[in-house]
Amino acid sequence: MDIKDFIISFFTTREWASITLFTLFLLYSARAKSVRKSMIRVLKAFLHWKILLPIICAQIYLSVFAYVLYKNELWNTAILRETIFFLLYTSISLIFKYNSNSQRIASVKGIVEDTIKATLIVEFYLNIHTFSYWIELIIQFLLAFLFLLGAVNKRDTQELEKTYGCTQTLFYCLSISLLVYSIYLSGEQWRENFSSQNITSLLFPIIATLAYWPFLYILSVIKVYEEWFVRIYFASNKEEYGFRKNQVLKACGINLSLIHFVSKDFHVYIPQTHRQFVDDLNKSVEKYKIKKI
Image 1 (cartoon, rainbow, N blue to C red):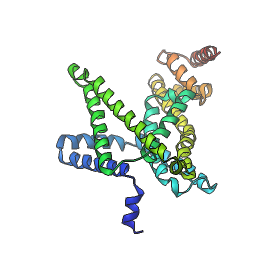
Image 2 (image 1 turned 180 degrees about the horizontal axis):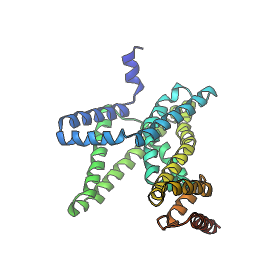
Image 3 (image 1 turned 90 degrees about the horizontal axis):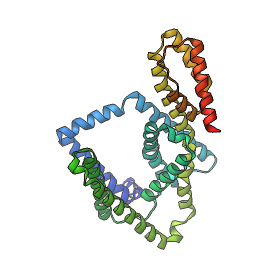
Image 4 (image 1 turned 30 degrees about the vertical axis):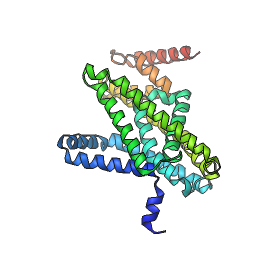
């Protein structure tokens, strides 16, 4: 098998349809001046070191995790596509998700839900029955169109907002119908689909998401502390800032739910002596412990 045949066979028709649509979108963006400017602004924002650094660290963390699995004969090239998809899509989307809602990472329910969602997305995209290239292209175009139309309707005028519910309903109906039908077709070929290789590919996103959780947790802790320390910085002089920062770290540690609670309960802007600061901080910590009882 030459390189051309290998590349063609490596991607499914669903993936080729996605590549085609993404390429067409890039070509359109390059031609349309307003879209091109918006894309450049988005790209510049994305390349800011505060956004890029966590993503690079995540890729390194997950690459090391995959290497550890490989050394223990728990990973092989049969799940390379699942690994690439998890690295380039799932890991980055989870970073942005927990960045906007860092409390979710401290919730067991949230972790379970996100693990299930990540698994379903990976399995549907990579392993559930795929249609012919042209059918996949039409389906993905319709889904993208409905999704973008719903987003525009939600943000624009009040009149357009009325159609938001309609477009969302159409989007979910089409998505669920395709999922059910694909599972039905896959079920007819259960001997092929439930091979040991497919079981491995099914388990990988579950294991990878759970292994990714400590990284996301620490990232969320850093993010919440950073926001809190900015408030402390502007309410303190240089000497007070160092002392207060150390006291906060000692009192809260890496308990994310405690950090969230105390940062909201503790009024850092009120002028305080060192002793008052420590007393008020300890009172907030005690409030949290009583609340948890």
